[in-house]
Length: 151
Image 1 (cartoon, rainbow, N blue to C red):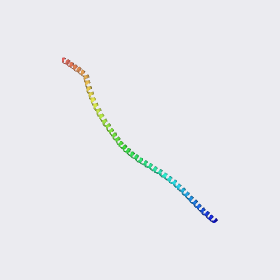
Image 2 (image 1 turned 90 degrees about the vertical axis):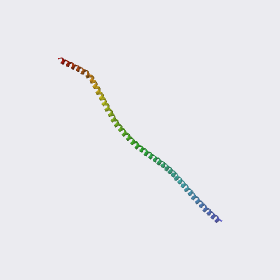
Image 3 (image 1 turned 45 degrees about the vertical axis):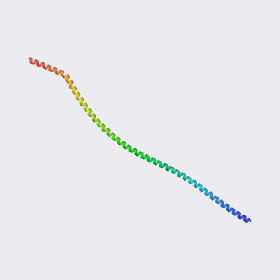
Image 4 (image 1 turned 180 degrees about the vertical axis):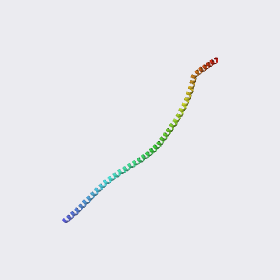
């Protein structure tokens, strides 16, 4: 009977060792599972972060495209304004030249008119001044002729 107890004890011991080994294997599997789970969570978080960064990058790219379009539009508008500015400057130059010529014409006409009026006025005033002398001279001449004739 001791042998039976001994065999039973050995079987119990073997079963206990097997259970212990199975328990340790399950603990190891659980530990690996937890580590894998943590690793997957980290990777998932990293992936979520990368997805968010990618989304932000795409938004920034869209914004950059909009800004490039706006810059192109502004540059086109700048070219148009530059052409308009040059056109206006040409018009100003032409207007200044034509105004200068017109002013010169008006000034010349005014000078001619003023010169003629002044000349006419001077002639008139000279006649008014000379007329009494002319009358006096004629009268003196007549007197002298009368004197000559009387003699």
